[in-house]
Length: 462
Image (tube, rainbow, N blue to C red):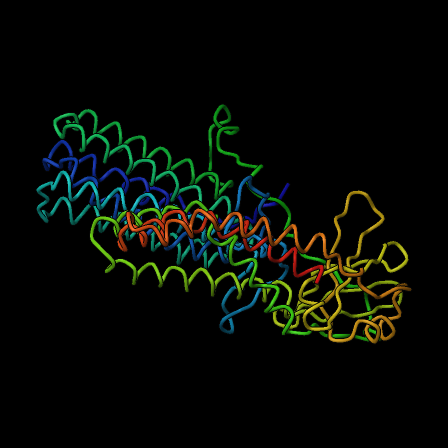
C-alpha cells in the first residue's frame, strides 16, 4: 500500500477540469454540436491525453503490478533506477516504458485507423465554430495545467504508477469507439440526449480518475471506496545495495549481448499493436500496391532497433560487484543496483547459451535458494573462469554441455518444415507480387518467431 503525498490540486483547479469537460455539453444543446464535431473535440483531447500520459508514465516513481499478455520491451519491467535527462528534471524510469508503448500501440493500431475509416466512410461536415474551438481549447488548457502545476511542480510523479496514469487514455479510446459507432450507423442517433449522456459519462470518468490520482481531495464517505485503485500501484521497486565499497568487479561483454538480442526481435512482432499495424499495412499492399512497402520497412526497422536497444539496456550496461557476502549487479548507466544475491544462499550453474558457443564467452544462471525469489543471469562475460576467480564465486565447473547432433538436426528440420508453405507461395505462379508482399507483411511475423526459436535452439548445441 503506497502512501500519497499531501500535494493535491486545489478546488479551483478541480473545478476548471470539470467545467472544461462539460463545455461540449453546452455546445450540444446551445451550439448545435453534432457527432462529427464532438468526435473532433475528443479526438484532439485523446491525442493530447496520450502524449501527456506517455510522459507522465515514464516519470511515475511507484511500481506497477504485472499485467497478463505480452508487453512491448517486457524485459525492461525488471530494470531498476532512472536517469535524469537534465539537471532539476525528474528521472525517467525505463521500467515504465512497456506501459507507455502499450497505450501508444493501442492508439496506433486501433483508434487512429478506426478514426480514419470514420472520416473516409461517413465524411461528416465539421465547421470550425466558436463552440468547437472553445471545447478543444478548454480541454487542452485543463490537460496542460494539470501536467505542469500538479504533476510536475507538486511532484505528484513520486506518488503514482504508470498503470494509474494510463487509465484515462484507454477510457477516451473507448469513448471515441462509441461515438464513431454511432456516427457510422446513423448520425441521427447522435441526438442531443445521446450526446449529452456520452459527455456526462466521459466527464464522470475524468472526475473519477482525478480523485484516484489525488486521494486528498474531499470525497463523501459513502463514495470513498469508489475512488481508490490500490491494485494499480505498489511500492517503488528499488533495491538497497550492501554498504561499503566493492571488493572486486567484472563488466559484461557487449558483443554477446548484442548477438543475444537478435532472437528477441521476433518477440517484438507478437504485440497486438504491432500485429495490428502489419495487418493494416498488408491489406494496404494488397489494395494499393507495393508503394505501402516503404512504411512497412520503416515499422520493421523501428521494431528491430527498439528490441535490440531494449535488450542491451537490460543486460549490456551491467557491472557485477562482490561485496563480502553478496554479489550485486550494478547498472553503470542508471547508477542503480539491479539485484543482490547472497553468495552462500544461491546455486550457480553454467547456462548453455548460443552466443557463448559462437563467441567463446560465458554466462551463469544464479538460482536463489529462497523459493519466493526467481533466478537471475550473470554475464555474459569475456572470460568466465577469470570472472569466477575475480569475484570468488562458488563455481567448480565452467564448461558448457557437449554438442548434441540429434537436437541440432531435429530443430533444423522443424524450422525447414515451417518454411515449406511460405516457399510454396513464393514460387507459385498463381500468387502475384503484390499479393505475396501483402501476405508477407500480414502473416510473415507469425512464422518468424518459431523459426528463429528453433534455429537458436540448434545453435545452442553446435
